[in-house]
Length: 152
Image: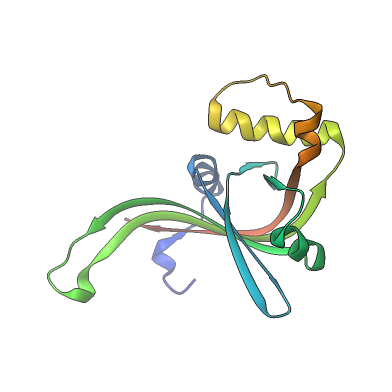
């Protein structure tokens, strides 16, 4: 990181950002064509999970190349300056890299969906209709590396 004074070194602080951020952006690439999508997500035990439709561009790309980059951020406030280059933005962010995989086994899928639902609803127990489970694909990402950045 070029601006080392902005680097987040504390893994707990990165975890707090990952647990607080409402949206994660997943970037992937095939045949020199990048693609990025925002997803609802949850992180647990060095794994990132999100759900999506069973078919589409994202799925095709992940099948061709499972390497992904992800980004989450917590925006702060605009910092006004006296000159154009003195303006800034306060924020906290995490960027990571990993390998995506598809979760097909029903119990593992339910566990990941439970984590997602708990993050966004605050509830603990959920019931999923079989047809809904058949329609949804859950993607896991084995997180390999992460870095965090803060602008105060």
